[in-house]
Length: 279
Image (cartoon, one colour):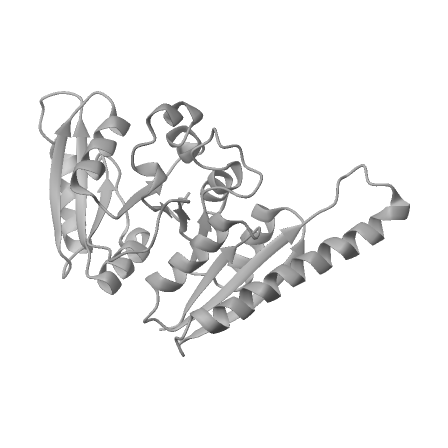
């Protein structure tokens, strides 16, 4: 089965690292990679200089993409990989959303920060916005310090309170199969109580969804879910964390500036954002 991946770049080291990670992750898969660079001119640019600035921005974009293609022609030896360079003028997230729809993209993989994002933020604003706004395909964010290595364990935190559908997990299942990674389902409770009937039913559905894969269920007791997830991922040296976004601003809250005081796994572990396609 051919996979289609969208890899946005602003030609920063973080963006190139995300591209390298994506290629390594799917190194044995038949893939088409769409490497996207967007550009724009300031709204207050005078009309007389608008055309010139657009032309210069377009030229710089194409040059940067050409350099990436030349580099990949040397570093990526897979005969199963095909690359497309896409240069567009406009909003990054809007253009990505359009390409995802028109090109039937299976997953977006991008760096957590661009060349101009503040070092105060754990995740750059464009990455968080992409996780929130691109609802029709998964988005994976690759931290600047993450380097591809063998993926042995993927952590999926859940409260078991929501009824997920099987197709919500397709990309997680695919990655687990490709890498032969184990899925660790983590539930965090703030009280010493067990699961109710609905939660147990939802847990049993996960057993069906993950059939044929290695998986296990874990419970931690902590009033702060994020602290518990941090501790679990760090103590086990897990390789990826997966969330399902079912509400607006989920990732904006999860990856807020306040977490800069406790970076935890966010600085080194990729995060995969899945989406409930019904929302």
